[in-house]
Length: 190
Image 1 (tube, rainbow, N blue to C red):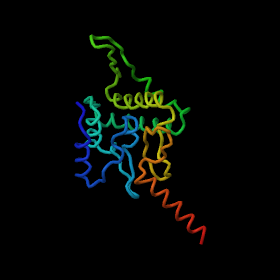
Image 2 (image 1 turned 120 degrees about the vertical axis):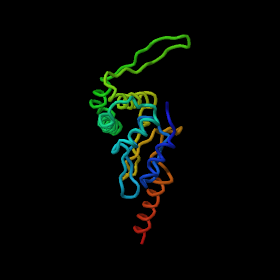
Image 3 (image 1 turned 90 degrees about the vertical axis):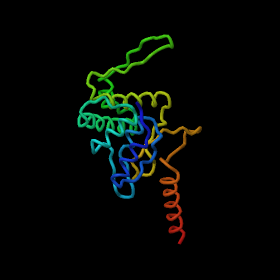
Image 4 (image 1 turned 180 degrees about the horizontal axis):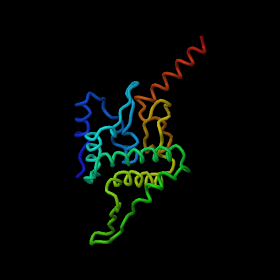
């Protein structure tokens, strides 16, 4: 059963970690954002068993497989997803992950039922993340992006009408970029 972000937030607070940004993104972006920066410090939910399990629980992806194996496959998926977002023609690693599973389609009284099938339960979460990126990139081509602020590592799905969103958050990175442009113009004028 899917849990809320609350259990994961409690684990972060217990460690004195800052809150996670962009927690309402689709699964593919959320695994990309399982690593983030706060100031100059980097945080990674895929570093510790308990944090990885809390993230899996949040998404209803805990299969009971050995968490070290799940974490290794999730890190592999995170790298593959980041490579594909950076260059949509760079799909080799993502396709290797997708090759490890499939969707079994069946029909019941209410309509079509899609059941994910992955031979190795430790690969299930990674496969679901890769599948979600493929879905989002198909439904919204070019809308999965890395934040335009170079030091920022966050990703988002641009749901704006014009598709021109550049920042993970205007309040964080957007305002920083505006302030930097202002300082640059001000120094150039003096």
